[in-house]
Length: 278
Length: 306
Image (tube, rainbow over all chains, first blue to last red; front, side, top):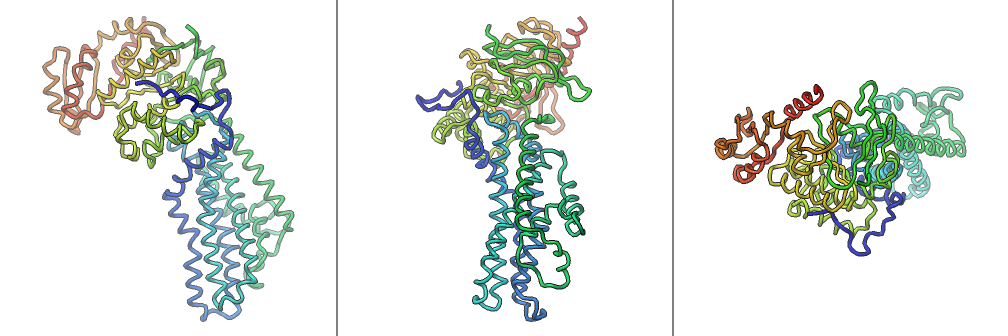
Protein backbone atom coordinates (compact mmCIF):
# COMPACT_ATOMS: atom_id res chain seq x y z
CA UNK A 1 0.00 0.00 0.00
CA UNK A 2 1.10 3.56 -0.49
CA UNK A 3 -0.24 7.03 -0.98
CA UNK A 4 -1.95 7.83 -4.25
CA UNK A 5 0.16 9.38 -6.98
CA UNK A 6 -1.61 11.53 -9.52
CA UNK A 7 -2.53 10.19 -12.92
CA UNK A 8 -0.31 11.76 -15.59
CA UNK A 9 -1.45 15.32 -16.13
CA UNK A 10 -4.26 15.00 -13.58
CA UNK A 11 -2.76 17.10 -10.80
CA UNK A 12 -3.07 20.65 -12.08
CA UNK A 13 -3.04 22.26 -8.64
CA UNK A 14 -0.75 25.19 -7.96
CA UNK A 15 0.73 23.84 -4.75
CA UNK A 16 2.28 27.15 -3.85
CA UNK A 17 -1.16 28.70 -3.30
CA UNK A 18 -4.39 27.93 -1.54
CA UNK A 19 -7.22 26.57 -3.70
CA UNK A 20 -8.94 29.55 -5.41
CA UNK A 21 -11.57 31.20 -3.20
CA UNK A 22 -14.67 30.41 -5.26
CA UNK A 23 -13.65 26.86 -6.01
CA UNK A 24 -13.01 26.19 -2.33
CA UNK A 25 -16.21 28.01 -1.33
CA UNK A 26 -18.19 25.89 -3.77
CA UNK A 27 -16.70 22.69 -2.34
CA UNK A 28 -17.61 23.80 1.19
CA UNK A 29 -21.09 24.78 -0.04
CA UNK A 30 -21.64 21.32 -1.56
CA UNK A 31 -20.42 19.63 1.60
CA UNK A 32 -22.55 21.80 3.90
CA UNK A 33 -25.78 21.98 1.94
CA UNK A 34 -26.85 18.38 2.23
CA UNK A 35 -26.09 18.24 5.94
CA UNK A 36 -28.02 21.45 6.45
CA UNK A 37 -31.08 20.45 4.42
CA UNK A 38 -31.42 16.98 5.94
CA UNK A 39 -30.95 18.05 9.55
CA UNK A 40 -33.38 17.98 12.48
CA UNK A 41 -32.99 21.73 12.57
CA UNK A 42 -34.52 21.92 9.09
CA UNK A 43 -37.56 19.93 10.19
CA UNK A 44 -38.19 22.51 12.90
CA UNK A 45 -37.61 25.32 10.45
CA UNK A 46 -40.09 23.83 7.98
CA UNK A 47 -42.68 24.01 10.75
CA UNK A 48 -41.65 27.51 11.78
CA UNK A 49 -41.47 29.00 8.30
CA UNK A 50 -44.36 27.04 6.83
CA UNK A 51 -46.84 27.75 9.64
CA UNK A 52 -48.50 30.76 7.94
CA UNK A 53 -49.65 28.60 5.01
CA UNK A 54 -52.05 26.40 7.06
CA UNK A 55 -53.05 29.50 9.03
CA UNK A 56 -53.89 31.21 5.74
CA UNK A 57 -56.00 28.20 4.81
CA UNK A 58 -57.91 28.48 8.10
CA UNK A 59 -58.32 32.20 7.48
CA UNK A 60 -59.86 31.44 4.09
CA UNK A 61 -62.26 28.99 5.68
CA UNK A 62 -63.35 31.25 8.55
CA UNK A 63 -63.18 34.66 6.85
CA UNK A 64 -66.95 34.97 6.79
CA UNK A 65 -66.93 35.19 10.61
CA UNK A 66 -64.36 38.04 10.71
CA UNK A 67 -65.22 41.75 10.47
CA UNK A 68 -65.53 42.71 6.79
CA UNK A 69 -62.78 45.36 7.07
CA UNK A 70 -60.10 42.64 7.67
CA UNK A 71 -59.24 41.53 4.17
CA UNK A 72 -56.96 38.74 3.02
CA UNK A 73 -54.27 41.13 1.81
CA UNK A 74 -54.26 42.92 5.19
CA UNK A 75 -53.78 39.62 6.95
CA UNK A 76 -50.95 38.81 4.55
CA UNK A 77 -49.31 42.13 5.49
CA UNK A 78 -49.44 41.17 9.15
CA UNK A 79 -47.96 37.76 8.40
CA UNK A 80 -45.04 39.30 6.50
CA UNK A 81 -44.33 42.11 8.94
CA UNK A 82 -44.98 40.48 12.30
CA UNK A 83 -44.48 36.83 11.66
CA UNK A 84 -41.75 36.58 9.06
CA UNK A 85 -39.63 39.73 9.25
CA UNK A 86 -39.94 40.32 12.97
CA UNK A 87 -39.89 36.76 14.35
CA UNK A 88 -39.63 33.66 12.19
CA UNK A 89 -36.85 34.70 9.81
CA UNK A 90 -34.59 36.13 12.55
CA UNK A 91 -35.17 32.93 14.54
CA UNK A 92 -34.29 30.78 11.52
CA UNK A 93 -31.17 32.90 11.02
CA UNK A 94 -30.29 32.52 14.69
CA UNK A 95 -30.52 28.74 14.67
CA UNK A 96 -28.75 28.22 11.36
CA UNK A 97 -26.14 30.96 11.24
CA UNK A 98 -24.84 30.62 14.80
CA UNK A 99 -24.30 26.94 14.02
CA UNK A 100 -22.30 27.42 10.82
CA UNK A 101 -18.99 27.12 12.64
CA UNK A 102 -20.25 25.95 16.05
CA UNK A 103 -21.60 22.66 14.64
CA UNK A 104 -18.23 21.85 13.11
CA UNK A 105 -16.46 22.72 16.34
CA UNK A 106 -18.85 20.73 18.52
CA UNK A 107 -18.79 17.81 16.08
CA UNK A 108 -14.99 18.15 15.95
CA UNK A 109 -15.11 17.99 12.16
CA UNK A 110 -13.59 21.47 11.88
CA UNK A 111 -10.17 19.82 11.82
CA UNK A 112 -10.88 18.41 8.34
CA UNK A 113 -11.80 21.85 7.03
CA UNK A 114 -8.82 23.59 8.59
CA UNK A 115 -6.27 21.09 7.33
CA UNK A 116 -7.04 21.64 3.65
CA UNK A 117 -5.25 24.09 1.33
CA UNK A 118 -8.10 26.60 1.46
CA UNK A 119 -8.48 30.05 2.94
CA UNK A 120 -10.63 30.02 6.02
CA UNK A 121 -12.73 32.79 4.54
CA UNK A 122 -13.85 30.41 1.80
CA UNK A 123 -15.09 28.01 4.48
CA UNK A 124 -17.27 30.73 5.95
CA UNK A 125 -18.43 31.91 2.53
CA UNK A 126 -19.43 28.39 1.44
CA UNK A 127 -21.27 27.75 4.67
CA UNK A 128 -23.05 31.09 4.56
CA UNK A 129 -24.16 30.41 1.00
CA UNK A 130 -25.49 27.00 2.05
CA UNK A 131 -27.40 28.66 4.91
CA UNK A 132 -28.95 31.20 2.54
CA UNK A 133 -29.99 28.62 -0.04
CA UNK A 134 -31.52 26.40 2.66
CA UNK A 135 -33.48 29.13 4.42
CA UNK A 136 -34.62 30.77 1.18
CA UNK A 137 -35.76 27.38 -0.10
CA UNK A 138 -37.82 26.96 3.07
CA UNK A 139 -39.16 30.50 3.40
CA UNK A 140 -39.95 31.70 -0.11
CA UNK A 141 -42.38 28.92 -1.13
CA UNK A 142 -44.25 29.43 2.16
CA UNK A 143 -44.46 33.19 1.53
CA UNK A 144 -45.74 32.68 -2.00
CA UNK A 145 -48.29 30.07 -0.90
CA UNK A 146 -49.52 32.31 1.90
CA UNK A 147 -49.82 35.21 -0.52
CA UNK A 148 -51.95 33.23 -2.99
CA UNK A 149 -54.12 31.70 -0.27
CA UNK A 150 -54.88 35.11 1.22
CA UNK A 151 -55.18 37.33 -1.83
CA UNK A 152 -57.48 35.03 -3.80
CA UNK A 153 -60.13 34.66 -1.10
CA UNK A 154 -62.61 36.69 -3.11
CA UNK A 155 -61.40 35.48 -6.48
CA UNK A 156 -58.31 35.96 -8.65
CA UNK A 157 -59.34 39.28 -10.15
CA UNK A 158 -57.97 41.52 -7.37
CA UNK A 159 -54.75 39.63 -6.92
CA UNK A 160 -52.88 41.13 -9.87
CA UNK A 161 -52.50 44.55 -8.28
CA UNK A 162 -50.75 42.97 -5.26
CA UNK A 163 -48.17 40.96 -7.20
CA UNK A 164 -45.53 43.76 -7.08
CA UNK A 165 -45.89 43.67 -3.28
CA UNK A 166 -45.21 39.94 -3.34
CA UNK A 167 -41.93 40.47 -5.21
CA UNK A 168 -40.94 43.26 -2.91
CA UNK A 169 -41.74 41.11 0.12
CA UNK A 170 -39.68 38.28 -1.27
CA UNK A 171 -36.80 40.71 -1.56
CA UNK A 172 -37.29 41.82 2.04
CA UNK A 173 -37.45 38.19 3.17
CA UNK A 174 -34.12 37.53 1.43
CA UNK A 175 -32.61 40.69 2.88
CA UNK A 176 -33.82 39.74 6.36
CA UNK A 177 -32.17 36.33 6.08
CA UNK A 178 -28.92 37.85 4.80
CA UNK A 179 -28.78 40.59 7.44
CA UNK A 180 -29.67 38.50 10.47
CA UNK A 181 -27.64 35.63 9.03
CA UNK A 182 -24.57 37.86 8.85
CA UNK A 183 -25.18 39.13 12.39
CA UNK A 184 -25.63 35.65 13.85
CA UNK A 185 -22.66 34.28 11.90
CA UNK A 186 -20.60 36.94 13.65
CA UNK A 187 -22.09 35.96 17.02
CA UNK A 188 -21.45 32.31 16.20
CA UNK A 189 -17.72 32.80 15.67
CA UNK A 190 -17.43 35.29 18.52
CA UNK A 191 -19.23 33.43 21.29
CA UNK A 192 -18.99 29.86 22.48
CA UNK A 193 -22.71 29.70 23.39
CA UNK A 194 -24.42 32.19 21.08
CA UNK A 195 -28.07 31.05 21.19
CA UNK A 196 -29.16 32.64 24.49
CA UNK A 197 -27.49 36.00 23.72
CA UNK A 198 -29.06 35.75 20.26
CA UNK A 199 -32.53 35.23 21.70
CA UNK A 200 -32.00 38.14 24.08
CA UNK A 201 -30.95 40.29 21.16
CA UNK A 202 -34.04 39.35 19.15
CA UNK A 203 -36.64 39.63 21.85
CA UNK A 204 -35.21 42.30 24.14
CA UNK A 205 -32.83 44.56 22.23
CA UNK A 206 -34.90 44.58 19.05
CA UNK A 207 -37.89 45.93 20.99
CA UNK A 208 -36.09 49.27 20.74
CA UNK A 209 -37.50 49.38 17.23
CA UNK A 210 -40.79 50.41 18.84
CA UNK A 211 -39.23 53.14 20.97
CA UNK A 212 -39.52 56.84 20.07
CA UNK A 213 -36.74 59.03 18.69
CA UNK A 214 -33.51 57.67 17.28
CA UNK A 215 -33.49 54.46 19.26
CA UNK A 216 -35.05 52.31 16.49
CA UNK A 217 -32.02 53.11 14.33
CA UNK A 218 -29.91 50.97 16.68
CA UNK A 219 -31.87 47.88 15.72
CA UNK A 220 -31.88 45.74 12.62
CA UNK A 221 -35.60 45.19 12.43
CA UNK A 222 -36.51 48.89 12.16
CA UNK A 223 -34.76 49.10 8.78
CA UNK A 224 -36.16 45.84 7.48
CA UNK A 225 -39.78 46.45 8.42
CA UNK A 226 -39.59 49.95 6.88
CA UNK A 227 -38.92 48.23 3.56
CA UNK A 228 -42.34 46.56 3.64
CA UNK A 229 -44.62 48.90 1.75
CA UNK A 230 -48.06 47.57 2.36
CA UNK A 231 -49.26 47.93 5.91
CA UNK A 232 -51.75 46.27 8.21
CA UNK A 233 -55.01 48.21 8.77
CA UNK A 234 -54.68 51.74 10.16
CA UNK A 235 -55.92 50.87 13.59
CA UNK A 236 -54.81 48.82 16.54
CA UNK A 237 -51.28 47.54 15.95
CA UNK A 238 -50.60 50.13 13.32
CA UNK A 239 -49.07 52.43 15.94
CA UNK A 240 -45.91 50.41 16.13
CA UNK A 241 -45.35 51.14 12.49
CA UNK A 242 -45.32 54.83 13.24
CA UNK A 243 -41.64 55.17 12.42
CA UNK A 244 -41.04 54.33 8.82
CA UNK A 245 -37.46 55.06 7.81
CA UNK A 246 -36.66 56.19 4.25
CA UNK A 247 -36.02 53.32 1.85
CA UNK A 248 -32.61 54.62 0.75
CA UNK A 249 -31.45 54.91 4.35
CA UNK A 250 -32.73 51.40 5.09
CA UNK A 251 -30.90 49.88 2.13
CA UNK A 252 -27.68 51.71 2.99
CA UNK A 253 -27.88 50.73 6.64
CA UNK A 254 -28.71 47.10 5.90
CA UNK A 255 -25.94 46.90 3.27
CA UNK A 256 -23.40 48.37 5.68
CA UNK A 257 -24.48 45.98 8.43
CA UNK A 258 -24.11 42.96 6.16
CA UNK A 259 -20.60 44.01 5.11
CA UNK A 260 -19.47 44.79 8.66
CA UNK A 261 -20.93 41.64 10.21
CA UNK A 262 -19.57 39.31 7.55
CA UNK A 263 -16.16 40.98 7.45
CA UNK A 264 -15.96 40.76 11.26
CA UNK A 265 -16.97 37.09 11.21
CA UNK A 266 -14.44 36.31 8.47
CA UNK A 267 -11.64 38.08 10.31
CA UNK A 268 -12.36 36.33 13.60
CA UNK A 269 -12.72 32.92 11.97
CA UNK A 270 -9.51 33.41 10.00
CA UNK A 271 -7.42 34.25 13.03
CA UNK A 272 -8.96 32.07 15.73
CA UNK A 273 -7.55 28.76 16.90
CA UNK A 274 -9.98 25.93 17.37
CA UNK A 275 -8.69 23.84 20.23
CA UNK A 276 -10.81 20.72 20.42
CA UNK A 277 -11.21 18.79 23.64
CA UNK A 278 -10.08 15.20 23.14
CA UNK B 1 18.90 14.59 7.24
CA UNK B 2 16.97 17.47 5.66
CA UNK B 3 14.55 18.90 8.18
CA UNK B 4 10.93 18.87 7.06
CA UNK B 5 9.52 19.94 10.39
CA UNK B 6 11.39 22.45 12.52
CA UNK B 7 10.53 23.52 16.04
CA UNK B 8 12.62 26.43 17.22
CA UNK B 9 12.19 27.21 20.93
CA UNK B 10 8.50 26.53 20.44
CA UNK B 11 6.24 26.81 23.43
CA UNK B 12 2.52 26.61 23.66
CA UNK B 13 0.33 27.26 26.65
CA UNK B 14 -3.40 27.26 27.27
CA UNK B 15 -3.97 29.92 29.89
CA UNK B 16 -1.77 28.91 32.83
CA UNK B 17 -1.18 25.37 31.53
CA UNK B 18 2.04 24.78 29.58
CA UNK B 19 1.41 22.11 26.96
CA UNK B 20 4.74 22.44 25.15
CA UNK B 21 7.76 23.98 26.76
CA UNK B 22 10.63 25.51 24.80
CA UNK B 23 10.99 22.71 22.30
CA UNK B 24 13.75 22.81 19.70
CA UNK B 25 13.93 19.83 17.40
CA UNK B 26 13.71 18.76 13.77
CA UNK B 27 12.03 15.89 11.98
CA UNK B 28 13.17 14.68 8.58
CA UNK B 29 12.01 12.18 5.96
CA UNK B 30 11.13 8.69 7.14
CA UNK B 31 8.95 7.61 10.02
CA UNK B 32 9.41 9.26 13.41
CA UNK B 33 7.47 8.15 16.44
CA UNK B 34 6.25 10.74 18.89
CA UNK B 35 6.00 8.83 22.09
CA UNK B 36 4.59 9.92 25.39
CA UNK B 37 1.81 9.21 27.86
CA UNK B 38 -1.55 10.90 27.56
CA UNK B 39 -1.28 14.59 28.42
CA UNK B 40 2.44 14.70 27.58
CA UNK B 41 1.97 17.26 24.79
CA UNK B 42 1.92 14.94 21.75
CA UNK B 43 -1.27 16.35 20.27
CA UNK B 44 -0.12 19.91 20.83
CA UNK B 45 3.18 19.07 19.14
CA UNK B 46 1.29 17.70 16.13
CA UNK B 47 -1.30 20.48 16.04
CA UNK B 48 1.46 23.07 15.92
CA UNK B 49 2.88 21.34 12.84
CA UNK B 50 -0.61 20.99 11.38
CA UNK B 51 -1.16 24.74 11.67
CA UNK B 52 -4.13 24.25 13.96
CA UNK B 53 -2.43 26.09 16.79
CA UNK B 54 -0.04 29.01 16.75
CA UNK B 55 3.01 28.74 18.99
CA UNK B 56 2.76 31.02 22.02
CA UNK B 57 6.48 31.53 21.63
CA UNK B 58 9.09 30.43 19.12
CA UNK B 59 8.58 29.05 15.63
CA UNK B 60 7.22 25.94 13.98
CA UNK B 61 8.03 25.51 10.31
CA UNK B 62 6.90 22.86 7.85
CA UNK B 63 8.70 22.51 4.51
CA UNK B 64 10.35 25.85 5.25
CA UNK B 65 7.13 27.78 5.88
CA UNK B 66 5.49 28.88 9.11
CA UNK B 67 2.92 26.20 9.90
CA UNK B 68 0.37 28.66 11.31
CA UNK B 69 -1.38 30.71 8.64
CA UNK B 70 -0.06 28.86 5.58
CA UNK B 71 -3.04 26.91 4.22
CA UNK B 72 -1.21 26.19 0.94
CA UNK B 73 0.98 23.77 2.92
CA UNK B 74 -1.90 21.32 3.04
CA UNK B 75 -1.37 20.45 -0.61
CA UNK B 76 1.68 18.63 0.71
CA UNK B 77 0.65 17.81 4.26
CA UNK B 78 -1.86 15.17 5.34
CA UNK B 79 -3.33 15.13 8.83
CA UNK B 80 -4.99 12.18 10.55
CA UNK B 81 -6.55 13.66 13.70
CA UNK B 82 -7.02 11.71 16.90
CA UNK B 83 -10.64 12.73 17.38
CA UNK B 84 -13.21 10.19 16.26
CA UNK B 85 -15.30 12.78 14.42
CA UNK B 86 -17.02 12.62 11.04
CA UNK B 87 -19.97 13.92 9.10
CA UNK B 88 -21.81 10.77 10.05
CA UNK B 89 -24.40 10.99 7.27
CA UNK B 90 -21.78 10.80 4.51
CA UNK B 91 -20.66 7.53 3.02
CA UNK B 92 -16.97 6.69 3.02
CA UNK B 93 -16.75 7.61 -0.65
CA UNK B 94 -18.60 10.92 -0.22
CA UNK B 95 -16.35 11.82 2.72
CA UNK B 96 -13.17 11.30 0.70
CA UNK B 97 -14.60 13.00 -2.40
CA UNK B 98 -15.62 16.06 -0.37
CA UNK B 99 -12.19 16.42 1.21
CA UNK B 100 -10.41 15.88 -2.10
CA UNK B 101 -12.53 18.62 -3.69
CA UNK B 102 -11.38 20.86 -0.85
CA UNK B 103 -7.83 20.00 -1.85
CA UNK B 104 -8.43 21.38 -5.33
CA UNK B 105 -8.89 18.29 -7.50
CA UNK B 106 -11.52 18.06 -10.22
CA UNK B 107 -14.33 15.53 -9.87
CA UNK B 108 -12.79 12.81 -12.05
CA UNK B 109 -9.51 12.98 -10.19
CA UNK B 110 -11.33 13.07 -6.84
CA UNK B 111 -13.16 9.88 -7.75
CA UNK B 112 -10.01 8.14 -8.90
CA UNK B 113 -8.12 9.09 -5.76
CA UNK B 114 -11.02 8.28 -3.46
CA UNK B 115 -11.41 4.82 -4.98
CA UNK B 116 -7.71 4.19 -4.69
CA UNK B 117 -7.57 5.43 -1.10
CA UNK B 118 -10.51 3.22 -0.14
CA UNK B 119 -8.73 0.28 -1.68
CA UNK B 120 -5.57 1.12 0.24
CA UNK B 121 -7.37 0.90 3.57
CA UNK B 122 -9.54 -2.09 2.55
CA UNK B 123 -12.81 -0.17 2.64
CA UNK B 124 -13.86 -0.56 -0.99
CA UNK B 125 -16.81 -2.77 -0.11
CA UNK B 126 -17.98 -0.34 2.56
CA UNK B 127 -17.57 2.77 0.43
CA UNK B 128 -21.31 3.33 -0.04
CA UNK B 129 -22.19 2.78 3.62
CA UNK B 130 -22.64 5.74 5.90
CA UNK B 131 -19.71 6.40 8.19
CA UNK B 132 -22.16 6.50 11.10
CA UNK B 133 -22.51 2.72 10.64
CA UNK B 134 -18.76 2.02 10.51
CA UNK B 135 -16.97 0.13 13.30
CA UNK B 136 -14.25 1.88 15.30
CA UNK B 137 -11.54 0.28 13.18
CA UNK B 138 -13.22 1.28 9.92
CA UNK B 139 -13.51 4.85 11.15
CA UNK B 140 -9.80 4.88 11.90
CA UNK B 141 -9.08 3.59 8.42
CA UNK B 142 -11.26 6.10 6.60
CA UNK B 143 -9.57 8.83 8.63
CA UNK B 144 -6.23 7.47 7.52
CA UNK B 145 -7.46 7.35 3.90
CA UNK B 146 -8.37 11.05 3.89
CA UNK B 147 -4.89 11.95 5.10
CA UNK B 148 -3.26 9.98 2.27
CA UNK B 149 -5.59 10.52 -0.66
CA UNK B 150 -3.95 13.73 -1.90
CA UNK B 151 -0.49 12.16 -1.95
CA UNK B 152 1.13 14.37 0.72
CA UNK B 153 4.84 14.70 1.31
CA UNK B 154 4.34 15.10 5.07
CA UNK B 155 1.96 13.00 7.17
CA UNK B 156 0.97 13.87 10.71
CA UNK B 157 -0.78 10.90 12.28
CA UNK B 158 -2.24 11.26 15.75
CA UNK B 159 -2.72 7.83 17.37
CA UNK B 160 -3.62 6.19 14.03
CA UNK B 161 -3.80 2.65 15.40
CA UNK B 162 -6.15 3.43 18.26
CA UNK B 163 -9.08 1.02 18.28
CA UNK B 164 -7.97 -0.99 15.23
CA UNK B 165 -8.28 -4.76 15.22
CA UNK B 166 -5.00 -6.71 14.95
CA UNK B 167 -5.28 -7.43 11.21
CA UNK B 168 -5.81 -3.80 10.25
CA UNK B 169 -3.27 -2.70 12.80
CA UNK B 170 -0.68 -4.77 11.00
CA UNK B 171 -1.88 -3.47 7.62
CA UNK B 172 -1.62 0.13 8.82
CA UNK B 173 1.81 -0.42 10.33
CA UNK B 174 2.98 -1.78 6.97
CA UNK B 175 1.47 1.22 5.20
CA UNK B 176 3.23 3.68 7.49
CA UNK B 177 6.55 1.92 7.02
CA UNK B 178 6.10 1.97 3.27
CA UNK B 179 5.30 5.68 3.30
CA UNK B 180 8.49 6.26 5.25
CA UNK B 181 10.53 4.21 2.81
CA UNK B 182 9.14 6.29 -0.06
CA UNK B 183 10.87 9.30 1.48
CA UNK B 184 7.84 10.98 2.99
CA UNK B 185 8.07 12.54 6.41
CA UNK B 186 5.71 10.65 8.69
CA UNK B 187 5.27 11.74 12.29
CA UNK B 188 3.20 9.25 14.25
CA UNK B 189 2.12 9.86 17.81
CA UNK B 190 1.35 7.08 20.21
CA UNK B 191 1.37 6.31 23.89
CA UNK B 192 2.29 2.70 23.15
CA UNK B 193 5.96 1.98 22.71
CA UNK B 194 5.40 -1.26 20.84
CA UNK B 195 3.15 0.37 18.30
CA UNK B 196 5.84 2.90 17.52
CA UNK B 197 8.54 0.28 17.57
CA UNK B 198 6.66 -1.69 14.92
CA UNK B 199 6.83 1.32 12.61
CA UNK B 200 10.20 2.93 13.26
CA UNK B 201 13.27 3.04 15.39
CA UNK B 202 13.43 6.80 15.44
CA UNK B 203 11.50 8.35 18.31
CA UNK B 204 10.94 11.62 20.07
CA UNK B 205 10.11 11.05 23.70
CA UNK B 206 7.85 13.72 25.07
CA UNK B 207 6.77 14.23 28.64
CA UNK B 208 5.26 17.20 30.44
CA UNK B 209 5.62 19.31 27.31
CA UNK B 210 9.34 18.71 26.91
CA UNK B 211 11.32 16.50 24.58
CA UNK B 212 13.00 14.12 27.00
CA UNK B 213 15.01 12.21 24.45
CA UNK B 214 15.44 11.69 20.73
CA UNK B 215 16.91 8.63 19.14
CA UNK B 216 16.67 4.90 18.89
CA UNK B 217 13.62 3.24 20.31
CA UNK B 218 15.56 0.15 21.39
CA UNK B 219 17.13 1.97 24.31
CA UNK B 220 13.69 2.75 25.62
CA UNK B 221 12.54 -0.74 24.89
CA UNK B 222 15.20 -2.21 27.16
CA UNK B 223 13.76 -0.20 30.00
CA UNK B 224 10.27 -1.19 28.99
CA UNK B 225 10.94 -4.89 29.27
CA UNK B 226 10.94 -4.55 33.04
CA UNK B 227 7.28 -3.55 32.90
CA UNK B 228 4.48 -5.89 31.88
CA UNK B 229 2.48 -4.60 28.92
CA UNK B 230 -1.32 -4.53 29.12
CA UNK B 231 -3.55 -5.08 26.09
CA UNK B 232 -7.35 -4.93 26.10
CA UNK B 233 -9.21 -6.72 23.29
CA UNK B 234 -12.91 -6.66 22.46
CA UNK B 235 -14.00 -9.93 20.88
CA UNK B 236 -17.20 -11.53 19.66
CA UNK B 237 -16.06 -14.76 21.37
CA UNK B 238 -13.77 -13.72 24.23
CA UNK B 239 -13.52 -17.26 25.59
CA UNK B 240 -12.11 -18.55 22.29
CA UNK B 241 -9.58 -15.75 22.37
CA UNK B 242 -8.64 -16.57 25.95
CA UNK B 243 -8.19 -20.24 25.12
CA UNK B 244 -5.88 -19.36 22.24
CA UNK B 245 -3.54 -17.11 24.19
CA UNK B 246 -3.66 -18.28 27.80
CA UNK B 247 -1.04 -21.03 27.44
CA UNK B 248 1.55 -18.86 25.70
CA UNK B 249 4.74 -18.36 27.74
CA UNK B 250 4.72 -14.59 27.24
CA UNK B 251 1.24 -14.14 28.70
CA UNK B 252 1.44 -13.26 32.39
CA UNK B 253 -2.23 -12.89 33.23
CA UNK B 254 -5.65 -12.72 31.61
CA UNK B 255 -8.91 -11.24 32.88
CA UNK B 256 -12.42 -10.90 31.45
CA UNK B 257 -14.05 -7.49 31.41
CA UNK B 258 -17.31 -6.79 33.19
CA UNK B 259 -19.35 -6.49 29.99
CA UNK B 260 -18.25 -9.93 28.82
CA UNK B 261 -16.80 -8.77 25.49
CA UNK B 262 -13.44 -7.55 26.71
CA UNK B 263 -10.36 -9.57 27.58
CA UNK B 264 -7.38 -7.90 29.22
CA UNK B 265 -4.00 -9.56 28.81
CA UNK B 266 -0.72 -8.77 30.54
CA UNK B 267 2.35 -9.84 28.61
CA UNK B 268 6.06 -9.66 29.26
CA UNK B 269 6.92 -9.70 25.55
CA UNK B 270 4.50 -7.54 23.58
CA UNK B 271 6.10 -8.24 20.19
CA UNK B 272 5.53 -11.95 20.53
CA UNK B 273 2.04 -11.36 21.80
CA UNK B 274 1.07 -9.10 18.90
CA UNK B 275 2.46 -11.59 16.38
CA UNK B 276 0.75 -14.55 18.02
CA UNK B 277 -2.61 -12.92 18.51
CA UNK B 278 -3.39 -12.19 14.84
CA UNK B 279 -4.80 -15.61 13.90
CA UNK B 280 -6.63 -16.03 17.19
CA UNK B 281 -8.08 -12.54 16.81
CA UNK B 282 -9.60 -13.36 13.43
CA UNK B 283 -11.19 -16.54 14.81
CA UNK B 284 -12.54 -14.88 17.94
CA UNK B 285 -13.83 -11.85 16.03
CA UNK B 286 -11.70 -9.19 17.69
CA UNK B 287 -13.08 -5.79 16.68
CA UNK B 288 -11.10 -3.45 18.90
CA UNK B 289 -7.76 -3.50 20.63
CA UNK B 290 -6.03 -0.87 22.73
CA UNK B 291 -3.32 -0.58 25.29
CA UNK B 292 -3.62 1.65 28.32
CA UNK B 293 -0.56 3.75 28.95
CA UNK B 294 0.21 3.00 32.60
CA UNK B 295 3.26 0.97 31.66
CA UNK B 296 4.70 3.77 29.50
CA UNK B 297 3.98 6.24 32.28
CA UNK B 298 6.08 4.14 34.63
CA UNK B 299 8.98 4.15 32.18
CA UNK B 300 8.75 7.91 31.89
CA UNK B 301 8.79 8.27 35.64
CA UNK B 302 11.89 6.13 35.66
CA UNK B 303 13.52 8.19 32.93
CA UNK B 304 12.72 11.48 34.61
CA UNK B 305 14.08 10.22 37.90
CA UNK B 306 17.39 9.25 36.23
